[in-house]
Length: 290
Length: 325
Image (cartoon, rainbow over all chains, first blue to last red; front, side, top):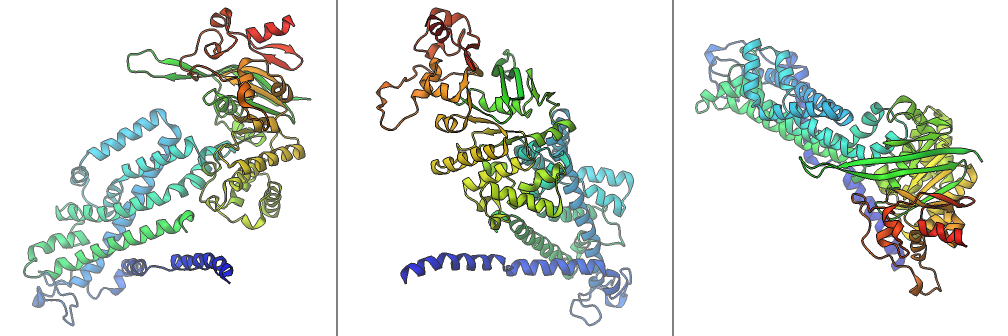
């Protein structure tokens, strides 16, 4: 009786642990739902926004939220805040997702190149990374945007340079340590090409660290874009972005806080969701803690 | 017997930087080693930590480039490290690692990893590939139900079986086992060593077995090379080395193996410091610790000379004794 009990209990324990692991935590579920909603909003922005982003309703300037016509109120020119928020989500998500992916890809590629070729290539990439880390990014962005003028493509590409040095350093360090002793060296020794070693073995193994780094870069890029827009060099009016809205809403903070709060809440919830989902995803991708 | 692998005067030299303006010291981790491995035989390489046996093993496989000397495998010169020819040559020679957990990718199920050499060299795909993986797992004593497990879900012995199965997947002619059992429990060691021996008998593969554990080497090797500070000091058949060691260093090594029922009083215990390859003694590198040291040992390094059929010793004293006898 007692023997069968002690024999049975570890198995049931393991099963219950596995079940609780496989179930989606509520915070992560909410995060995924929010991100899904954001992506849908961005994709169908043209269909779901009630007005055009430049339509002015001068009779209802600075209308408070809750009105039937303007659900989230209007700004100082009588433009619908909900409409502008929807458009901002689209613009900001495109910039932030595009730039995060760009910088992760670019940085990881350079990091792997440094680990593979060593020598001069590695020194050059590390010097570039140090240069990038030492240079205030905002000032470099200001210079580039002031020189070439602001466009969406340029903005995404420019933001794509933000934080690449972190990916490069992480990818280089992990690839070198995997290569000198361990699984990567073992696969090289089996006769695999460098492409196979990096794509099939090293990248999946370092992906969790890179994903965490991406969840950190994503909010930073949104904030960076906000800063640039605020300084007038990012997204140009009448086009709008989340940071742009916060910047212009600042003047009406006391009289019409909803102009600023609406995009601020979206920024906060989106970055929080990214962090939660990224963290969960990292655990999920790791078979050793499944 | 055909010679499968032939190494001639291999040397591996590391530079030790002592500071910006100090002349770097040359460390000869492997120093003028010549050896041959015949098809189907097992060569044991023994020696204490830091004597260069692992470096030698990697040089035999062409993973570490030789600074001097050359390796010929199956009659061909070893291709340059990382070249296309080098990658293709991996099919014929494989390495079994000391730490199986580090040598396996923790994100891939073990069946995938065992099948990896088949994919890399395009040896099998589809049903054929699955069948080959299954038979490899069977050969090393893994259950079919373990195919989808990850390395961390297996025991140390099972992981080493996975590494061995992966090394055998491309049906190589030579495997180099670099301390394959030193990370395992004693009870598991015997299983893995027996597995390697059985596999070798079944497949006729040649093996270089590197270990500091004489019991294990005695169990598996046909011939044994004893290394001291990057050089081979004695090479002979396994039986000869363990029954009648000639070099004083080999004698000390062999007498250090405890045997049941034999008192420990007659062991040769080496005096002096363990050797430092960065500061190699003059003459015979072993002379500061040698119980039989003569004047000539301090000045002249003995060369590896043949004293009987298949027996080579690098010692002024051991050689002289034999000639006198």
